[in-house]
Amino acid sequence: MYYTPFYQRQTQPSGNSYILSYAQGDVNGDYIPDLVYLVGQKSPDSPYTTDITLVIQDGKTQLFYSVPLKTNQGYQPSLFLGDFTGNKVNDIFIRMDSGGSGGFGYFYVYSFLNNQPTVLFDYETFDDLYDYSVIYQDQYRVRVTNQTLGLTFMIDLSNRGEEYLAEIYNSDGTLISPLEGSVLGLNQLYPIDFNGDGIYELYALQRIIGRYNADGLGLVQTPLQWDGQRFKPFIENQYVAVLGQPLNP
Image 1: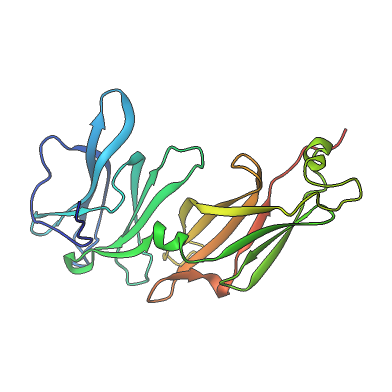
Image 2: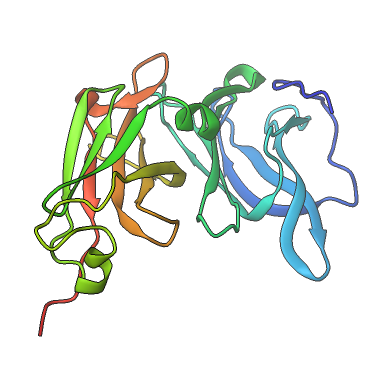
């Protein structure tokens, strides 16, 4: 089906659409609160929702504007209003859960300034932005590298169980064979006002996995700030958090 990203129409949503999430605030910049909805279709026997659409009712004119989403189906769709750009006007943060085993989410941030929808953040664009490598090293280490930002991180596997390590390493700590993991797509994205100045940033989490999806090694954490053109990492930096392991008896 042909998709027009910024298609909008001044119509009320159809009568068979369900309101999935709702918020109120000025999103078009006229200082009059608007009504913002996510609407879609529900299945009677499943929490999965389809045809999810962003709908804004202009608080001044009462006109409805409908904005289709590129990814328009998922679980637990919700929205949040906050100023992400510093222009004193609310933007629209949208999230949906994929429901898959990878724990992925679908995320957008829209501006609706002057009743014109503009995508500020698209999860698929973010997923394509950074080039990662996850390479197992001798002596129970895994090197995670963000080639795009020129950053490298080292994960220590030495506190993993003997059975786990024996599948990967020889008794002297050398690799049995070359092995790579991966950094998955965006799992979680949170709006957070880090500086307490009323302007929201984004906090992105991506899982680092080893030989299979359940073999979690850690999380890539990326705080993102609007720079006038796009969301980019604070001072071009990222962090890696490692998963805690039980203490040895």
